[in-house]
Image (cartoon, rainbow, N blue to C red; front, side, top):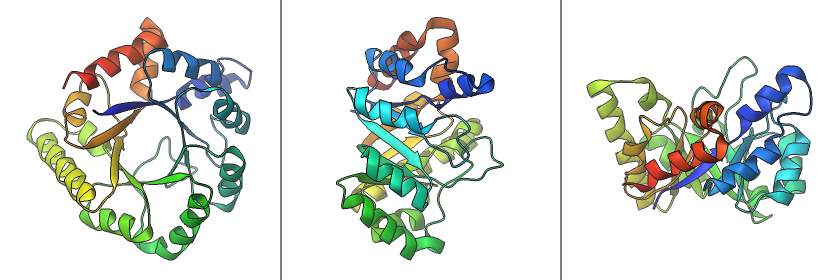
Length: 238
């Protein structure tokens, strides 16, 4: 059954808007787990625009599920991963000017560097995932480089409607099957919400969905624990 990873970056966004101590994403991770979250995801960005180093270290010490650390493939982030020892690392592309992650990794241009980078993480018994667009060549590069997981970028699916969205859904289904056939575990995320999640959750062999913005937005009305429960219920209903 597809599980749910809850991204709590947007809790930290609210805190950093005032550069204060609240709301504390570590406390909200506890509520997410009460709501049924199977893992907690945070993206520690180079510019520290939302999640801070202390958040990552405290989450590792306090959450009861699993910690998925999204990060760029830089030496600074590698050193942090060595100290934190998250359960998973998801490597993502990162631009300072972007509001949110705009697309998947370009694996072809960075194969040698990424292979060495993830070997360092695997030596620490950390599972490593590549955030990629649902394309055959990216899936094959992920396997060749040595990733354990791929996380398929669902942003395009989330933006489209009608038959265009249906076509993108078929691409995600085909990519999931292709990745599974070569031994990669498949996660997905980006832009998923309460209206579009069920079709993605129903894909055979979809391991986990990482969802943040829509859950936090819903939480403003109903509270985080209930918001996570509602999303988990949609995912489990398939």
